[in-house]
Image (tube, rainbow, N blue to C red; front, side):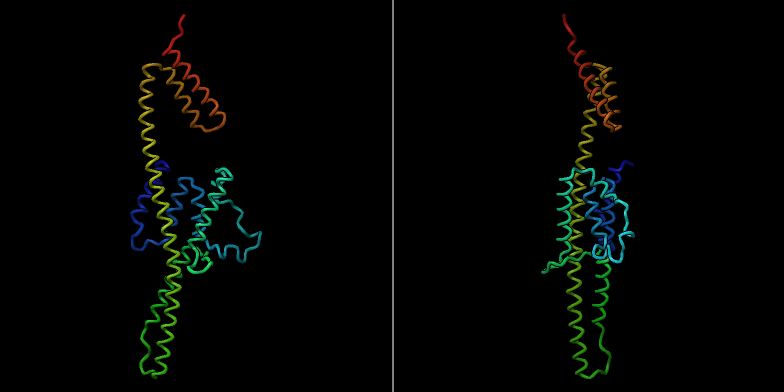
Amino acid sequence: MPDVDRASNLVQETLDQFEAPGMTVAALTRRCQRVASLRGDGVALSWMALESTDVANQFTNQSEASRPSRESLAARLLTTIPGDEANAKWTAEYDGYISRRRVDGTREANLRSVQQIEELTRTLREQEAATLVSPPPGMHSYDLGKHVSDQDRARTQLVASRIALETVLARIKARLWEFLTETEYELSFGEATAETFHRLRTYVDKQLMTISPPALEQFQTAYRRLKDGGDEDRAHALTSCRRVLKTLADQLYPARS
């Protein structure tokens, strides 16, 4: 199956399961990374890698020698984009990443991985539940009042921390949805364009077969050269195209005395 078809199928499957029970934001991020990888989208892979990485502690307790030197797929793909364009796109996506991670009301950004944030959110929910446990029987009224007050204060702090994390997760999830829907449109538009091109090429090939078989053969040679993709191959393809024009012109408008 071609990569574009695999990417399209994965996009549809992920959109269908986006709100399914048990589907974590970390799992959605990994699926989107797979889609971006299949499409060779270095910019998307870059910001998704940030979402999946514990950026806050990425270099903690690591010496220069022990840090990984292998270039990531995202970095390799970014080198295929012209420098100014790549820098502008990367800067915009990095700013978006920081904005999504910003804690409301402060300039502080939570740079933990999305999986760590989800795990911390679950822990906070468990701690909240623990504050709702009834106090032991037989407590003195003063002690009971202090116990309830302490529980309320702890629960308030836990809820505030959890909501801040859930807000970050909601922003990340919204960005992933945006990526998926944009990709779905691009893939659908690309498939429609490819289908149109295929129909037109079939029509042209049939006409050339009738009018000028040599021109059709030269066209097919140009297609094969383009598929090879090298600089010399493209140069030969251009030569074949010039020969197509000459052959077709000679057939349609033969020289006269």
